[in-house]
Amino acid sequence: NAGVTQTPKFQVLKTGQSMTLQCAQDMNHEYMSWYRQDPGMGLRLIHYSVGAGITDQGEVPNGYNVSRSTTEDFPLRLLSAAPSQTSVYFCASYRDINYGYTFGSGTRLTVV
Amino acid sequence: AQSVAQPEDQVNVAEGNPLTVKCTYSVSGNPYLFWYVQYPNRGLQFLLKYITGDNLVKGSYGFEAEFNKSQTSFHLKKPSALVSDSALYFCAVRLEGHGSSNTGKLIFGQGTTLQVKP
Image 1 (cartoon, each protein chain N blue to C red):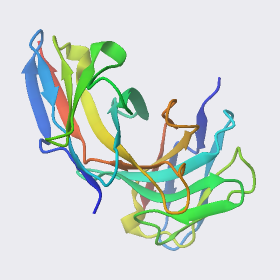
Image 2 (image 1 turned 45 degrees about the vertical axis):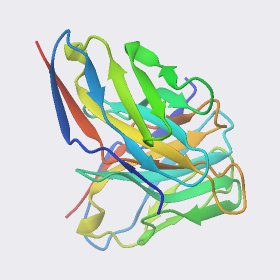
Image 3 (image 1 turned 60 degrees about the vertical axis):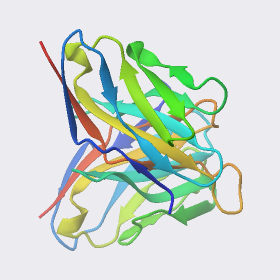
Image 4 (image 1 turned 30 degrees about the horizontal axis):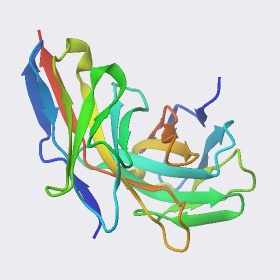
């Protein structure tokens, strides 16, 4: 099925560990983005990409890295996990304004 | 600063009654506005969008939204609420990026929980 696929769905990390959240889309969308969702704060933009090889920071980029080597994949890396990064992470892709945004099902991350 | 506000954390309505979930925005230029719904432990699902044209936009599941430029609002409405409409609703605005007309950054409100009681 066409869409945005996120893995893993759940993850528990210890403080200081690193990991990569995977995001892949098969719709040939140029634009992809990562959000984190925290209670009462809505979704906040972490990083985004307007195409392969191009990334930029969103509202809350600290502690996260991204790369975009292909159109399909947009992984999010946590370099040294902190309890403040406990959140639900959503990846989204976008074709153009007439088609809106497609979201993945999310990754629930707990840092202990 | 460009922003989206949803002034109500929770909206409670009885099944069969009309519902309104409020959203106001502050952006420079013409806004592109969206509503998304999130059911428990699920991702966000697109409901409707306003780009240009008719101020009343119709979307999925019987929802509609009214764009009001003078009040900078984009309230979500439904004539008759269902218990199954209970969920978390997000209003969002697309921003124009720097250096490109298609960067597509989406800024969200904090969300409004809709509770529809039988």
